[in-house]
Image 1 (tube, rainbow, N blue to C red):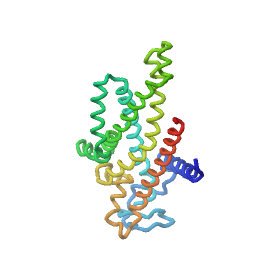
Image 2: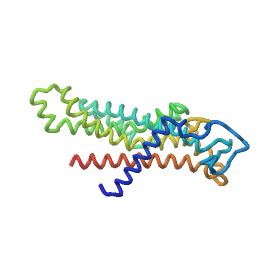
Image 3: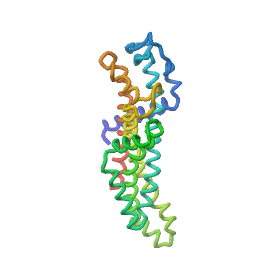
Length: 270
């Protein structure tokens, strides 16, 4: 790995560690109550008293960004973890299922993959209704097909590997051979994809919240905050800029780490 890539990876890991700490213990980083309003302090620019300024209701934007990490990152991580588990299960089952069942499952997966993830999530939320839980469900449903596809491909590939065939010849039961020699490889491959998928899920959840389909006011959530500042962006750019920066930095850091892991996995497999 080149020096610039190592530096980028190190920075990304530090950023993700900081975001995780903020999401888990926002009270240690916030300087004010994120829900406390003060109309006399509305739309104040960034200052030592209010690091990121204040919004239309006089709420501290910095504290709202800090508390918003738990909701925005939490939804993305929860959706990715659920999609990972479902994709691993259904993909592995499809990989060992009879050809007819495998073909039917893959046709459904292909249909879902034919549409952009955000569009699928938008349709699901339109059916289920708005709300943070439904947003997490929608992002999960939109993301799970790619995990199913990868898990299925990895399962079918590893089942034909020489060491798996050798285990069968030696009399190892099929279920034990699958659990010991196939499943770990499938989990590893899908885990690398999930690392990249966290950023995509966070971005999708923020996009749905921006459209008013996620958490509602006065909840501090990055996408909702971004939408709340769009009408005053000309006079108070900070209301939208800092939540938008938080989304961008988080997604970029997760993507850098994920792509690095994928590159290493591909290099190890050669």
